[in-house]
Length: 496
Ligand code: C2O
Ligand code: CU
Ligand code: CU
Image 1 (cartoon, rainbow, N blue to C red):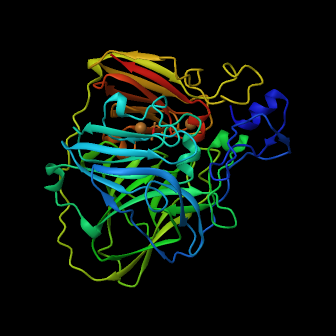
Image 2: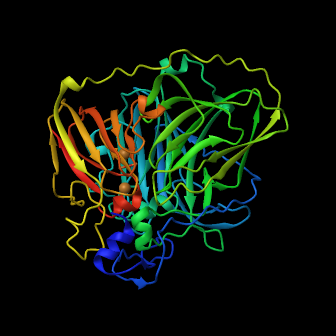
């Protein structure tokens, strides 16, 4: 059911209200009951406003796996020349990029200098449950905690962000997120573009006030569709430009937005290659001309500027797309590449990349079905919070919703056939493979041929995944639209 029909059913007409919270202004309510009645149309969120692409893209500093991270309020410029209060883990907005070798011991000291609780979840790292940043593992304001674990996984791009229930959307939106790159000898042997030819990027959208400061005040409409902003930023920079040479580049992209999905493409319509997904490299490069990337998902891309004339601009853009009523109608540019130097390219496209041994459905001991489309049951008639449910339930930290036997392989199905909002579904504690998608797009995309931890389930779709659960303990799975997650679209599962 969509928002309008939902409200009609309640006899409320259309609703638009501004409530919510801002850590930066100190107002900290999460009250969804205040409503202004205004006749309205289907909410699509703000359209994107482009600013001139003239600020050099910057890259967060790179740190090792034994470092310090401090969540705090800092000053940084999202818009050129406009310093504003944001949140970050180091000097500016966002956090440093953590580059770690698989097999190494990671020890990251987290200090919380916010005025409310926070924690860190390592999204895309397989860590013990007690180090995962579960919503109950909170670090109080002024407190600290050292996350320690030894990595044992494939090379991939992961990321990190806070996970306190009902505050994740706000803290992430105001600037708390960072990238993680896990390296292995096998991946290095492929000689993929590295150094200045490897460009890690976190793509986000922000709602900026007149001073260029991000604001977070979700209305009921925003909770329905996700908190989208009119300003697209890459690594904290709006209107970013990156100069490149005539050769192959590796773009490592995380969609770090609260609710916005991007349909990544190049303005010259050139094909590009997908070489990796959330959990690591694909078995072989996949050539595409566009890629839908939802919040939480990562894409490891190769982009060839070798045939672009020096002096030419090429934009990384988001093409319009169909399938979601709340977004996709608009195409916009994300970042400008200016090709400014001719260079001979020694790069050879590898024929094979990584290993993705298919998990066999015959080995699955259980199939679990989760209805993730909004239905009136479970909402208790007038409830305005908790509109986003998994199997009719909203998050309760003390309740174990699913019990999984340690070591078992299971099939989970997310059914959004009754819903009309997209839901990027994310599991902690394991990677998974996507088995199939029925309804909607009726197909898997190229990144879904690899290991995933987040999968987009569009309205009308039923998506089946398969995973083996090898980490004991209590983890969450949830929608990675952070407003949906904070609204309760999250459950616990225990592996034992
Ligand atoms: Cu990136 Cu539980 O989230
Ligand atoms: Cu995660
Ligand atoms: Cu959702």
